[in-house]
Image 1 (tube, rainbow, N blue to C red):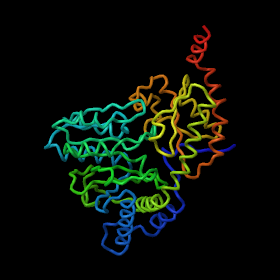
Image 2: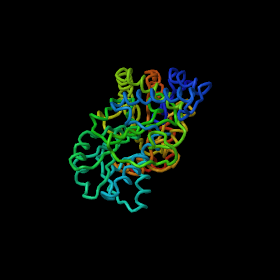
Image 3: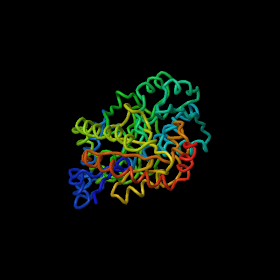
Image 4: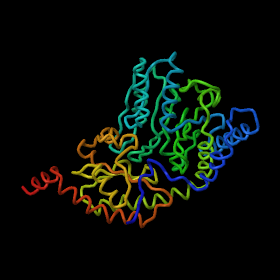
Length: 393
């Protein structure tokens, strides 16, 4: 049976060159970067080389990049660290309704400490209106957070315009760029953001490795207390092998970005155009043009995403039904609901995400397999039965 993996928004495969770069630091080069002897200094040099490579990918200064264990930790670090550091200025936060759970839950934690927040709505494509952000900013606002690209619907947000508004209001802006970095061009200076989160497993690097860009001069408190690692901003012995792997992945992503984008965009459009031709009552979610090049997402009426996932898995096809952080929750995506999609329809979410090794044959296999799967599941659906009965009246 053919195996087709289309859930790369959850994690991409490790590039062989990345693994090769990591192996010495999983074997013989085990020194701690904080140690003063030669083994420790060797690890420190490798860590700083990786920092420089990662900074190069996003147009940052080396000193503005701080390593974390994941994109979620980077989001927590940014939201909590920047909000608490500016508490003397106010206690109000602004964020979009389509943020990742790690942002939303960080804000909930801050609300327990006395902060308040405003959730900015989105349109039917999942786009944030910059003017809505302007209206949401108050005198007490200390931080705005708007995701750069949605991992659930692929929509790329107008962060540059939002950054101009925040800058004029004197409020720092954080963006969750986990789904974006390595897949589309991301330059922190061009974006105009004060903080940006990313994760290596979105651009062929190791899981468990992430980073936070913090603009020079921006105030932020540590999330993890302890030693002097990361300039005192993030304590704990560094994951040297993971960081080295992330640095190598960043170097490769920078060199291959244009080629990767074009190849995946062609296959993405093939799927977006042809799936609705093969199956009726299938709806694209997210913006058709302003979307990640490797991302295609749909809602399929009358059936649940989890049932489709399991049936497709039996055919050798791996996909997702929303964020990897919420897919086991068995509930409708908050992103889709924020876009005004009906709760029942939102339950039928499917997300397909590609990599540069995905082929046209993979997409065609999916397009051949999915119609009978949907047909079989709809025949068992009371919602579909009711629809057929009402349509025949």
